[in-house]
Image: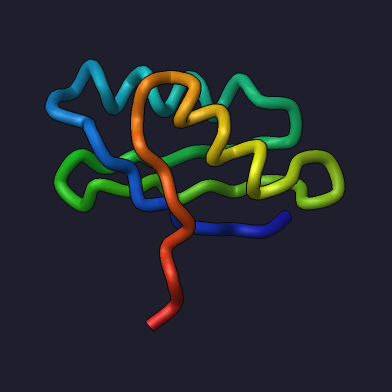
Length: 73
Protein backbone atom coordinates (compact mmCIF):
# COMPACT_ATOMS: atom_id res chain seq x y z
CA UNK A 1 0.00 0.00 0.00
CA UNK A 2 1.09 3.54 -0.75
CA UNK A 3 -0.02 6.85 0.71
CA UNK A 4 -0.33 10.15 -1.12
CA UNK A 5 -1.76 13.55 -0.28
CA UNK A 6 -3.99 15.43 -2.69
CA UNK A 7 -4.79 19.11 -2.36
CA UNK A 8 -8.57 19.48 -2.62
CA UNK A 9 -10.15 22.77 -3.64
CA UNK A 10 -13.78 23.81 -3.41
CA UNK A 11 -14.73 22.14 -0.12
CA UNK A 12 -16.78 24.45 2.08
CA UNK A 13 -18.43 22.22 4.68
CA UNK A 14 -18.63 18.80 6.30
CA UNK A 15 -20.90 17.61 3.51
CA UNK A 16 -18.13 18.29 1.00
CA UNK A 17 -15.71 16.29 3.14
CA UNK A 18 -18.14 13.36 3.26
CA UNK A 19 -18.68 13.54 -0.51
CA UNK A 20 -14.96 13.49 -1.30
CA UNK A 21 -14.34 10.71 1.24
CA UNK A 22 -17.14 8.59 -0.23
CA UNK A 23 -15.98 9.13 -3.82
CA UNK A 24 -12.42 8.08 -2.96
CA UNK A 25 -13.27 5.15 -0.70
CA UNK A 26 -15.65 3.71 -3.32
CA UNK A 27 -12.78 3.39 -5.81
CA UNK A 28 -11.36 -0.09 -6.31
CA UNK A 29 -7.88 -0.12 -4.79
CA UNK A 30 -8.43 2.61 -2.20
CA UNK A 31 -8.07 1.32 1.35
CA UNK A 32 -8.67 4.58 3.23
CA UNK A 33 -9.19 8.29 2.56
CA UNK A 34 -8.82 10.88 5.32
CA UNK A 35 -10.23 14.17 4.05
CA UNK A 36 -9.65 17.41 5.93
CA UNK A 37 -11.65 20.59 5.38
CA UNK A 38 -9.22 22.56 7.56
CA UNK A 39 -6.15 21.43 5.58
CA UNK A 40 -8.00 21.30 2.24
CA UNK A 41 -6.51 17.92 1.45
CA UNK A 42 -7.02 14.18 1.37
CA UNK A 43 -4.53 11.61 2.61
CA UNK A 44 -5.19 8.45 0.64
CA UNK A 45 -3.92 4.93 1.27
CA UNK A 46 -4.21 2.89 -1.92
CA UNK A 47 -2.87 -0.05 -3.92
CA UNK A 48 -0.72 1.43 -6.70
CA UNK A 49 -1.01 -1.85 -8.60
CA UNK A 50 -4.79 -1.46 -8.78
CA UNK A 51 -5.39 2.28 -9.23
CA UNK A 52 -3.27 5.13 -10.55
CA UNK A 53 -2.87 8.57 -9.00
CA UNK A 54 -4.45 10.16 -12.08
CA UNK A 55 -7.63 8.13 -11.48
CA UNK A 56 -7.82 9.41 -7.88
CA UNK A 57 -7.54 13.01 -9.07
CA UNK A 58 -10.06 12.43 -11.87
CA UNK A 59 -12.61 10.94 -9.44
CA UNK A 60 -12.40 13.99 -7.15
CA UNK A 61 -12.68 16.37 -10.12
CA UNK A 62 -15.66 14.43 -11.49
CA UNK A 63 -17.33 14.99 -8.10
CA UNK A 64 -17.03 18.75 -8.64
CA UNK A 65 -13.90 19.61 -6.69
CA UNK A 66 -10.40 20.65 -7.70
CA UNK A 67 -7.62 18.16 -7.00
CA UNK A 68 -3.86 18.16 -7.43
CA UNK A 69 -0.97 16.11 -6.11
CA UNK A 70 0.62 17.77 -3.08
CA UNK A 71 4.30 18.31 -3.71
CA UNK A 72 6.72 17.08 -1.08
CA UNK A 73 8.44 19.89 0.81
